Image 1 (cartoon, rainbow, N blue to C red):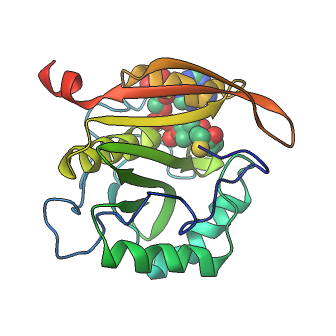
Image 2: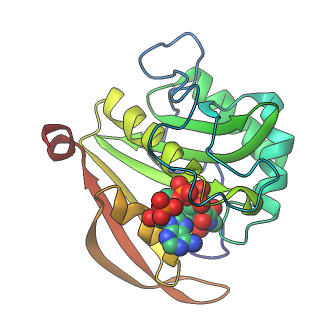
Length: 214
Ligand SMILES: CC(C)(COP(=O)(O)OP(=O)(O)OC[C@H]1O[C@@H](n2cnc3c(N)ncnc32)[C@H](O)[C@@H]1OP(=O)(O)O)[C@@H](O)C(=O)NCCC(=O)NCCS
């Protein structure tokens, strides 16, 4: 995820091969509300997190919209490993998604009027890339990251990807545990991939065909 250089990846639109995503509200296959209603099983409520609404997550994941962006930027600003793109970049990403909804995708986790997390993906030649998955610090350990990842997997399948891949900082234990829980396997390391601070990247991927057979 967060690419080399700073902690943020290429800005949306600069991601080669990563086209748009599935976020046009009219595309029911590639863009749907992924988890409406209570969070079934992803979090039993025994890890209520620190948010004011501690308890089982009763939110849903849906395609990111323009009016989500101020909240998305606020979350990103609070998370060093999130993409720190300016508003215009996020906006451009949503334009690209609207035009080419099978090549790029962005999702938000919401509960009531709150945006609590987001995920951004791209897809090219059958390989989907998870560019970012972020839960606001105050809403962690309530199953939101898991639901965002489920949305990412679901979108990747819906656009015909056979693999979902990503990279993460070697020290990012929370993220690595989340991915392991979802069945991602290691594809090795990329030495010195990250800057500020410099760190190796762990390369991970999920075989979507195998995952759908199991
Ligand atoms: C990684 C991240 C998205 C997880 O979000 P989250 O909403 O807290 O994740 P969930 O509540 O869905 O956790 C799902 C599972 O992941 C694992 N996990 C997540 N955070 C963990 C932590 N701090 N310690 C141990 N396991 C953790 C657990 O297996 C957890 O299941 P459990 O709570 O039932 O034990 C969140 O920590 C985050 O936003 N980190 C900063 C951004 C980032 O680094 N993203 C990844 C690279 S872009």
